[in-house]
Length: 383
Image (cartoon, rainbow, N blue to C red; front, side, top):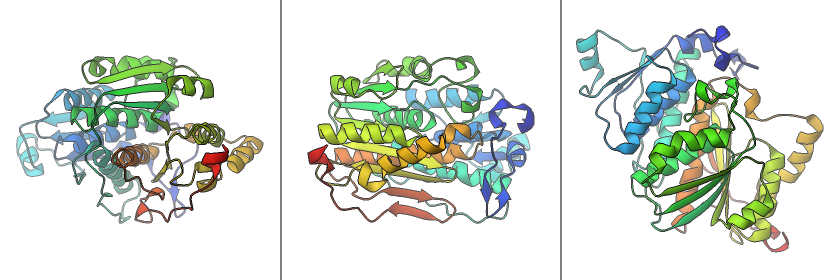
């Protein structure tokens, strides 16, 4: 793959680390081995395909409808770039059978083996692959943040705003949780007004060239239709921006924000505080990610945590855009981590033990954990 001629990697500004630009060309010429085809390994294979590695080798058997669907998606993202060897277990066996010696071996560690932990571990593995290929010599941490592997059985209604790469990774993670019987009956209403553009294709696991020009929510619904049936997921979509009236009509148990601008965050936060609904918000930048779990009368809202109202005004004055303006593959891993942290927060909320501080990830600084919480605010009472 040649980045200058591939529209997915026509970068609108290279990612830099300590003044050194990530070499996307080196990334697109690299190969990687993922030595297990479990949930974390499959997420990693998807992410590595999106990030643009020339070749990805996946070892081990893949069982069950969910993992098989994920394997199929990884194979279709860039036909011929993924090689799956279900009967092999090690790099030595791969070398003996095919003579292949991948540039790097990535073994995503997912403590708890749940969907949230798998997304976090896979995202970190993708980030590490990008650094090893595009910025060789940078030492990075490998141990993922602990994440709960079990949610709460029972019906759940989610209003999910944002059908971009982080939002769709969150949704696929929810399906993986369903496959693992982590949660019960699930109803999701997904809203987004954007259409799929070429610059979106290098970061989202549920659409491809055939979806260009389609509304994102319709592309997501069509891709997930085959596995949503019989999974316990009922997915409805709205091709619109966040609409307070639509949110109220849906009457969610939890509202989830996966948007890339502060105006939308401020509007979603205002609705959640006015209606006393838990809010999970997550986002990322290249190689960093965070998630917030805001619970009525138990924790601070986004107005206090992130100053979303002020930042929305600054954003409007500067006419700045979200991560959609950046086409680098560097946001692939951090999007997956952000979605995993959001899923981690949802499971913790369902268990009755939500984190009060932000869930943070910074690959460059080696930061993973929960930030010091803000004091409970009065926004929940005054709206």
